[in-house]
Length: 150
Image 1 (cartoon, one colour):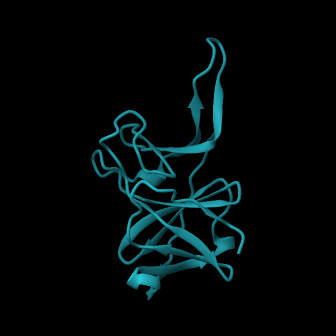
Image 2: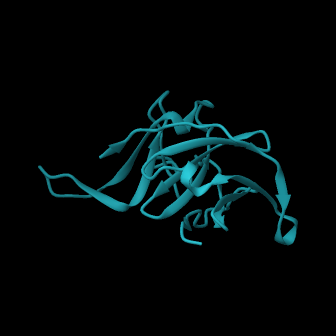
């Protein structure tokens, strides 16, 4: 089941958070529709924000393969190993496909599906008082998803 991307642009100034991490308020939660990728600008970077099943994910909008606009690609659930003649999806794993060359990346970890050495930056993201806040230092292969509830 492919989900169409959308885009919106929002420029917000960074704020300082715990441990001197740079954080940016990128807008109200309702600016990020469920099932879509919304592209925002934060500290000069384009970041795709995915709101799926009450979880938020933030991923850099640059494909590491050839710098394509990754978040303008298709969003879909990852295919699971299945019996011949059937198709099953992992409903807990989202994948974005780069529109330039079809490279696929796990939205939560940033890892390419078919080349472990290739990875796109993911960012910690949270909702604070109804506002979406992204930490601008990339995650290091940890869960980038955040519960949408305050």
